[in-house]
Length: 323
Image (cartoon, rainbow, N blue to C red):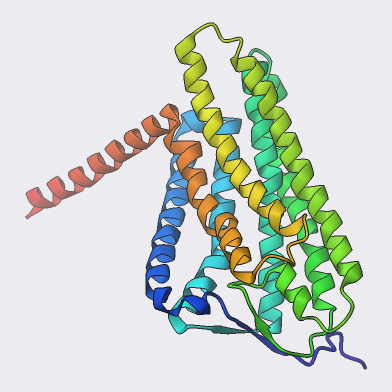
């Protein structure tokens, strides 16, 4: 029987940032610190939203799923990036590379759908506050979240399957810090025209449509904010929405620049820098923007911390009297 994978290449070497050898230690420390903050921040969000009954609202349901998604998303990319920086080059098997590619596309597409849903949720909350509870009930919110995850699962299958069917005859060096679509297609020794066109169309369908829907939601949000009579209320809402839109623009903008427009004329180093924004930076910014600027969430954090401190203080006091 003919094997499914006819490639002669059985493993790839990720070159990472080997052109910056003198900066490897500094980059390792910076990325490790960002990864620690990202995981810690998103774990805090999940914990607080899960334990505070007042945060059982659609907005926080979306936020909890986004935080869990960011943890999974960075876990797919950053540990291998850190290993690459530590060992000055990482060798991974063909199957591991394809697995990373699948989960990268899966989590990335899911985040696009989830961000669009969150923008729509904010639009309903500001544009139709009296009807919001019926238009965005917890049941409807749960269905929208499920749709985002299931659509992401399906989106990740096609590109990773098509890439895995390509022939790789050598060389096997990927000039990137993870198994990304463009460098893998450049390494293939078979025709990638159909694969490239399918991925291009899929990228337009996911990235551009989700970004357009998100922008439309924020246009309606801004038009509604302008009708707020209170100047301080307008400024506060503008500040929050502006921060949300800035992070969304960074995420979509860098992703679109990589997968929608041709980037063959860009140097691999520029592509790596662009990739850092949507794989490392935005997963850190999301918990900061969506939670730390939210007064209700900050109050829930303070309440949880006081509760934990009281429990810990009671245990310490009890052990003191027992002694």
